[in-house]
Length: 178
Image 1 (cartoon, one colour):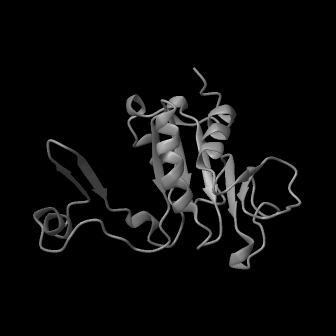
Image 2 (cartoon, rainbow, N blue to C red):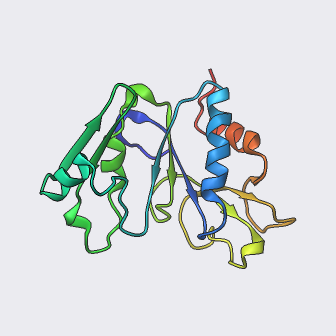
Image 3 (cartoon, one colour):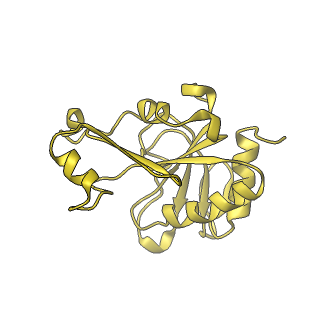
């Protein structure tokens, strides 16, 4: 497994848009939690996004020039950090993003997107979307979660509609068994 900050294992989920990466992750996360795991998630967005709302104080302060804006309550906090150094379209550095996570609150990091990153990946492949598999072209695919009847992949094929099977694979692959 690739070394990374805090020695938390990382597993990526890679697929064409519309394949169901987020849908699968939304089901795998509770399956991992039911097995005692605490997953953290990093998701790559391919466009400008904002989780803050215009008119809110935090939004207005950030747009006034605060490069970092942390909003906190008794239930949660959110840190928004401006990244002008990647305005040229480059993918953010995954190691830097992982280092921003609290390693005391996670057992593993699930990464959605970041297809070209150097980390083990589960490809989500659904023939119905009409796109070819990614595994011949991208590095690090260790398994394919699919609903295909057959697939010419030299590795585990996981049932894409069985999040428990995917969670068990991740736990075994990352050696997270108690």
